Length: 282
Image (cartoon, rainbow, N blue to C red; front, top):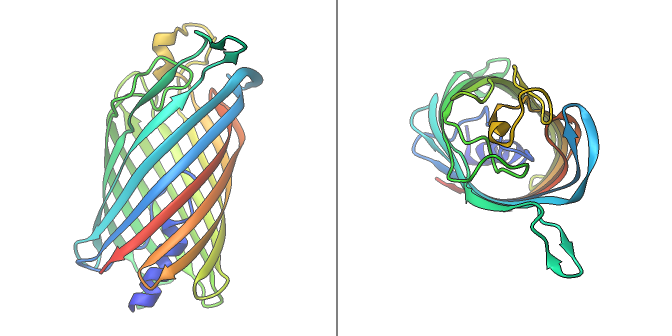
């Protein structure tokens, strides 16, 4: 695979997700890809169970993160995602901020993965198929609040990824997986789908659909719920996104993303804006 084709695949996949998603294409052996991201999420209503209700004030979150992937061999790569986030849910009146709500911050959950490519379209296979296993290390944020940055639990996840790049510039990729974390956080199924198009040799665009479905748990405000049991809720979400990417130099790209919640359960009905800067250390 030549460098230009490798970078095109990296841009079409690494730049395309409004939330964290993995990449079916691996970096060249000895090559490092790095992506720095900033994501802003905001919501003025929330799904309590499966019923949507207005919030008394906006729920906002800012997240800065870094994604790194390193090619060990032609078929094996390592990846890591880590970051820091702050979340605000504060009501402001004529007399300034009120005691309502909270402001939280801390390190996000760290995700450390290994990927094994079992089929490669660039050497004649019908598609690129990759298997991934990862460990999750819980972050340093506080739980037990509506605006908690995460569930505060370590664990692991396993997924299968598939991608295909067509000569007309269209690319399709997808991931389906299973995530398990320490009790009381329910296990969950997750999937990410994306279609991209290389408008020119430097400019690309795409659409994405991401879903996460908890396999159990309780509803906020339902039987057995207390603030201390926030990590045990049944949290589902479906998010639609669009993205635009531009290759600034042969090794660097910038992209912007927008996403919105289509439906959910025990989660915020949010709008998401992201900016990504990527570089290939070859």
